[in-house]
Length: 275
Image (cartoon, rainbow, N blue to C red; front, side, top):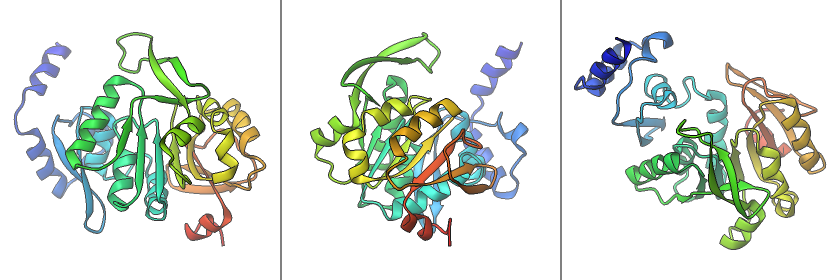
């Protein structure tokens, strides 16, 4: 019976128009709007007149952005920082791009920036490319994992079709040299606890470029391993709680929510994180 109603709902016409009209006068609570999804393109305002379009593939992230806005709920504190950071960055990497929300935001707020988006999973890579094409953005999309080796690795198949899949892998140091990126200013890293492997493949240029990093740290083991790579570079650490706070820490531990910000003192001052 449940599958019958789900199939019936998927065939209902005009859902986007109906929900867009509803959203103008009222935003339902999350337990309600999580069921109010559709498959179509929609517009995402960022700030002022700046906006981009994204395709709703039926996933919760797109649904959160449709109903609550780009900084309304999903990773809202991280995205607020990301928007400000992108405005002051020339070369930006989105590693673990998924459908490309962070890449799209970067190019929207800073059209002159060079943006590279990395997504190894073939399904999500296709979604990423669709969103880039939808906006006619010159974002360079790469179907590869950034890790500690150049070759082929196994990653979890998040589509649920199989337990793992083989994907191309490249060290970030190798990518920098291959593409002659020059100094990298800003990196977002979301690679499902493989962050230490990425850092291992970034040894050569990490201390040289010292990019600002928005990085997911899901447990204390990942935190301890990452600390070994960044502790002598001069970063300040900020633990981001997406429920509404960003706090400076002296050590790296499991994030209060998902992400940490690593940056220098000048950047922290510009963001208003310290005085």
